[in-house]
Length: 328
Image 1 (cartoon, rainbow, N blue to C red):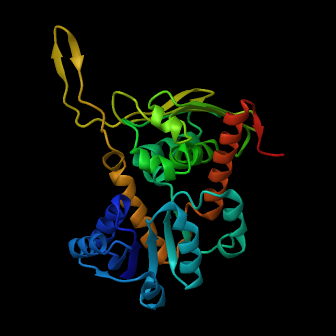
Image 2: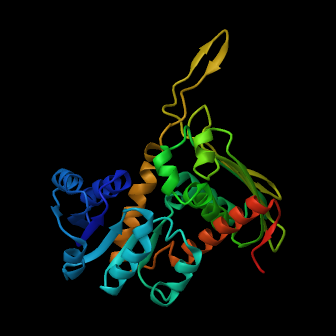
Image 3: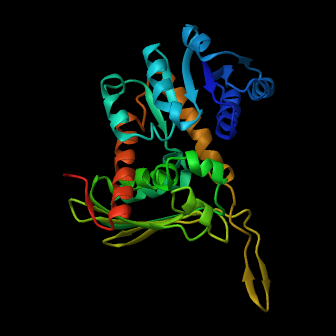
C-alpha cells in the first residue's frame, strides 16, 4: 500500500482522487488545494486529510503525488516533488513554455519517476489499435487520421489561460500521433481559425484546425480538431496500412438502436471526456501504482517535451501559413 497526495481539487483532481481512493494498492492520504472549501470537500469525500504542499513534501510516508493543479504549476510542482524523492503523476502539459520545459531536463530527463497524464494511451480501444498496428497484421502503417472534436467550447475564462488550442487540446493528438506512428514528425503544417465562437478569437485563440504531420520515412498524419462538433464528443482514429484499415470508433451512450420504416437510429455519442475516458483514467492510476512499485513510466518527461514542441511548431505554422520543420 502506497500513500499519495493529490494536488488540485478541481474537475480532474476529483477524478484522480476518486480513482486513488478506490485503488487497492494506493492510500490517498492528502488533498492539497489553495481553495480551502474545495480541498476539504474532496478530502471528506475520499477519506483523506487536507494539507499544504510543503507538508506533503516533508512527509516521508508519502511515496507519490498526483499533480492536477493549474497548468502553470505543473513544472514547478513536479520539480519540487521529484526533488523531495516523490514519484510524480502530472497532468499534461508539462508546461506551456517549451524552453522552460527543456531547461528542466537535468532534473526530470534522467529517469526520474515522472508520469505524464496523456490518458488516451491508456484507453482500451486505442491501446488495442496500437497493438494491432504493431502486430503487423495489416502490413506497414502508411497514414494516420486522428479526429478529435469537442461537443462544445470550454468557458471563455478557461480559453484565456489554456495556452491555446494546440497546447491544451491538440497536444493529446500530437502525443497519440507520435505513439501510433512510432516516429517523430519532421514537418508540421497547421491551418487554424476561429469559426465557432468570436469570443475565442477575441481571446487570441482558435477553435478549429487541420494539421498535417510528416515523418522522415514519409508517413503522414492528419489531425482534425474542433471545439464544437454539433453531434457529441467525436474521438476516432483511422490507421491506413499496406494491407487495409484499422479503425477505433466512437463510444456510444448505449448499444440500443431503434429500427423503423425510416431506418435505423442509434444512441448518441458519449458526450463528455470524463465519461469517454473513464476507464483510461482508472488505468492511469493503476500504472501509477506500478510506478510506485518500481516500474518505469510508460509516458514520461521526454514525451511531454516532444508533444509540446509539436504544439509550438503547429502554432508557428498556423501564424506563418507555411510548413515548419522540426529538424531545423
